[in-house]
Image (tube, rainbow, N blue to C red; front, side, top):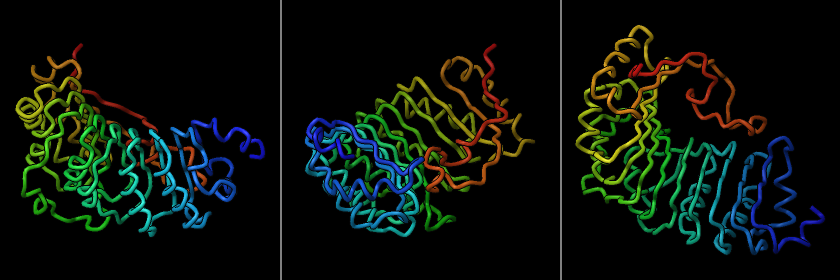
Length: 313
């Protein structure tokens, strides 16, 4: 770190992490409290453990990004379950005019995503994982990020797990997003989201060509998907429907695979359903000693068996 001041005006990329060397974030931010000091900074990978550093130091550093020209930002935050001010900081990061790629991985159970309606963002590539984000919050992303091309989001309701979201379908028309080409959605195992609810959003994605769904059992209907893709996403070229044996009883597995063995699915070379069986993992992927792992849910656990349909051989 002693050599860094001599090159501070040349640094374009920073990787600051507790991985392998816990405790290094605090001394770095004590020495460089503001990212504004890095005049050429364009890319920042920031991984921190909230239990190992004072929050005001982190908050000041993240807020200082408004005085940079950063275009790529990745934040992985551990032990932030009760850190509600982090949600406000995250929302403000959408205001960064030069930011094009933003990845957030954390456990935050309180973010008011509706505040995005007051913001116009230039983000084109967005990943949100582990954070409280309901199905209805997608509309706020669409209203905010007019240039969005790629969206990967975990739909997680941390507050009301059994809440019926059919009551929260937007009453007004959803803003079409004519730039979105790739969409990846993760659903909780007990998600109340239905095919009809998906249709309302898919109708607002006129140029979408890649779709991946990590599904619960209610979204494994081959005929319903055929109708939905044909009517709402005519430009789709790649479709992957994923689930696991944690969500689907193995006695039902063959019936689900057989339902995707029709002429329609066979003719669509890049349309598949993938069912995987995983080795159970009981560690928390957000723990400080697990920062090197990118484990979100069962889809990220080691695969021990896999089934794919349709069979085109």
